Length: 191
Image (cartoon, rainbow, N blue to C red):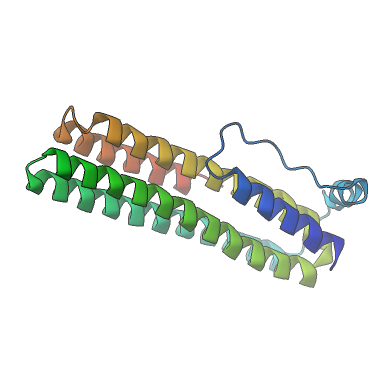
């Protein structure tokens, strides 16, 4: 396994391990040799073909993030509608809270799968284009952080819904629309 692949796999595990953790730390490779490789690889110029491939990878990151947010939004809407129709008794509230936790777990799994998908493609691209490895590592480090931040925002929002549901389902509904409008806007402005 090349140093590039080793660093990328360590970076992947760093970002997947950071999902749901507050205060994301910047990635540092595990050994001095890999740290030197990472430092030496950064800053090289890349061909137009590689630039185009990186643009496609960025677009894929945005699409994966938007798809994940859409799935979570739809799950939350379904759970809220079921809760509203149920009359809001204690059993319905418990079922709703379980549905919220299921959505949080689904978001964590979806973010993890997206990170894997993007890293697999980036490693393949970097192995085929060694001169672009530094650029690829920088970009994937940024993308990993963006996905971790997105999960923290989703998780915090889901927790807020659970906390506020007793107050007013209507207020939560409006917050859901506002929140997802904001997060979709953030994803569109990632790059």
